[in-house]
Image 1 (cartoon, rainbow, N blue to C red):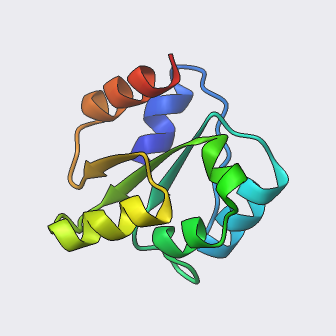
Image 2 (cartoon, rainbow, N blue to C red; image 1 turned 90 degrees about the vertical axis):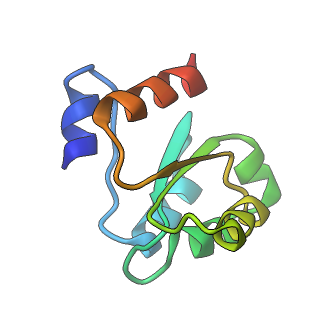
Length: 105
């Protein structure tokens, strides 16, 4: 909710998935400038979502992974799966917005 409230107030167009399976379907069916995935989601993790995307799909979007998993081995899994950016939880809305603006501008 914090992410949605922060971004909607700034008039970003946002789609929200309820779980990893729905996120995968949305990414497959639509075009996005930025996809924000949580590492831990029901049905499919953020890493599993990325592993199910084609290389072309991953190359065409920026992928920001939000995670409480900050060990180097977890970061390596996210990079190998195709994540471009990371933000550790907890994070401030200002830091998230700053990173998003850096990514999509």
